[in-house]
Figure 1 (cartoon, helix red, strand yellow):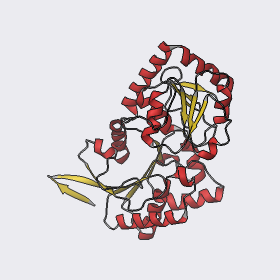
Figure 2 (tube, rainbow, N blue to C red):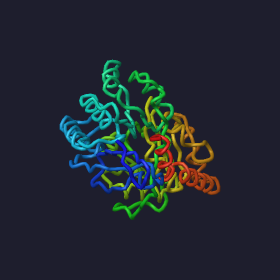
Figure 3 (spheres, one colour):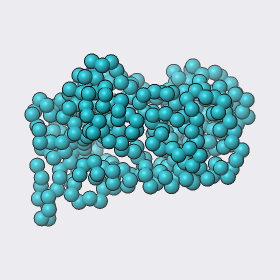
Length: 342
């Protein structure tokens, strides 16, 4: 359905996301200057624990909440429904099949599966998701993997760079050294390799992750392990670090992108494991430093280089901030969204 506004046709776009607390929450549509689109955001009425607290598996009660949320929002007709994260895409596609709404497009944003399961689970999920016209993934190397597992044509998958707005920081509630390196995040992290690479450094290393991950790491004076911090506290720790490190396991799906995109937006020198999720974002030696998975010796050498070479660190920091502003900001994402919806 299109609505006539000031003599022109507008496409009605419904946006569904669990993180919308009100219908006026800021999203990338706020940076969209294309008048062809009229966006409506539906507030999510339920409050669930973050996946960091509850784990990666979506509980049944949350699935039921998603069904109620989507069903209520879909009572009105729209030209296109944009969902955030795979669970909502699955629910909206299923409801669309039940309601036989063939004319409404579905675009699945932030389609980050984390991992793929067995073949039969993929075929079932792909059957339900067949109503989705576009899947926006944050790594180009995920396209082939998801297409094969879901048995959905790869042409429906598009690479959509993860974006971050300008990052706000404040003073963290914990006491930190004057000079330190930082690493944070929990998904597919390889902190064992990082901790091994850090052995013998005088400069402390701060790791922020889930408590059960930290408990598996050794206790030593220059290794600071933190958990249960706010997003702003995490951002503030990253902003104050001399070097940020995102050590990742070599998996078939992406991880770590929120962390290193945030450091790039902050304009910080970052070392990242070369893998599925990072290859689209980092230019080695220009906007960041790449190390191969599990290579603690190279990681140790790169950490030393960045700590000791102020010129190198400043050059990478400046290039990362410029790249992120031009390609990973809300404004850049809004331009990508227009192309996706057009």
